[in-house]
Length: 363
Image (cartoon, rainbow, N blue to C red; front, side, top):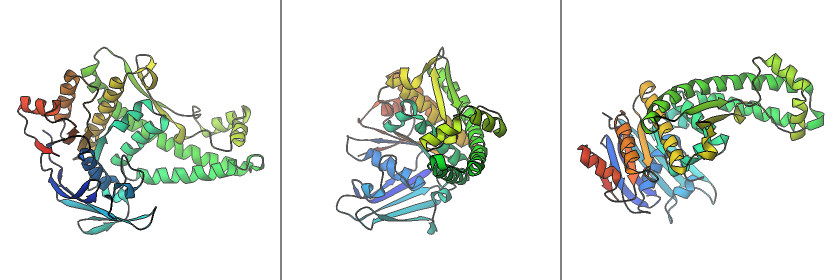
């Protein structure tokens, strides 16, 4: 059975909450309420406390309650308390202070060992129907959850890419030796990232395909990692072929790098058709749910306790699919915190029918 991981949440001047404290000390938490009552904001606050970023606001100042100059979030994960304070210091600037058990934290990488959540929202449909950057963001965030040091690799990659792009932006005045130097650097680190992405994708894919069989037992579904312009097995082959086919000249014309891990994609197909273009909204949402569930299962197996936050995930599903999803989610050891816009919705009915105790919060 799933376990309680997030114990409580306190908010001050966050979104519509002037001052509020909620007890989440239950394996299953169901938050119900009318639109605009603040259900999603509760999930947003927990997510922000974990990752120092919102899943719906570009700037933390957008989360400060109107008429206030700051907000505070305090979340208890088991015995650890994470406190976040954000103060608006100018029209476009904010100052943030983060503490774990009264000890200051300077990077959200340090938070990983204390709190770990996987969040699913309506915007996650972009994971299926959006551009490659959405799917890269999913697998890269998953890598961070598995190993916080992945952030250092991504930062180094970006530094190398910036240097190579700066060189290519000179176009006809490109120093060839420098180009080869940065090409080798980018090739090497791309291979590291691509390998780690593909390894993690294999774990997630295996779990996702098993779950999908519950819903689509006859369908053929595939998740394939697509590397951009790096099909050659060695750097030497890549350099030789790139010189021969004018690839480097093409990069000079464009003034930017046209190969590497920052251009890769994960192609999702149903049968022989790309899910991005040919799947229905309901199918896309189910694919998102199954991928997120697979990630949660992998984290539970490799990292330990994890909370699964679900923002109104039942929309677009019929009752049969909703109940099957509920069965799958409840079969994990993750704490479940999900919201529903309708009082006495399908989630509440299901839990009542199954005799499952949950913490019901009405806003």
